[in-house]
Length: 103
Image 1 (cartoon, one colour):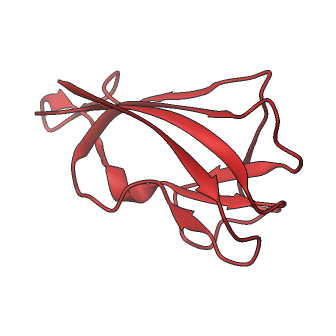
Image 2 (cartoon, helix red, strand yellow; image 1 turned 180 degrees about the vertical axis):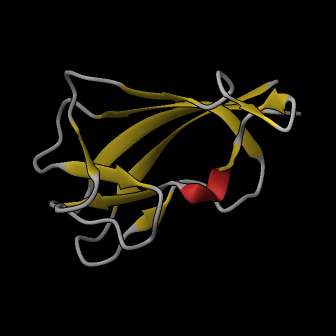
């Protein structure tokens, strides 16, 4: 396993941003909005993420998705890192993330 820790600055309120543009396989991911954010930050598995179809994050809660708890063809399940997209309602808000990747 390999861990990637990062932060994504939502630089635009008009275009969703991709967390990572790699096909590395993710076993688990955590998302958390920064405490000083002005607006809301939304996470989804599609580039059409918006305030109406994304998972709303805030600084009080952490969204954790564990894919490796499920079995796919006899192996722990994973998803591609490029599956995660972010949309913010205020430019310059930040979303922190931790990805546990297969090696």
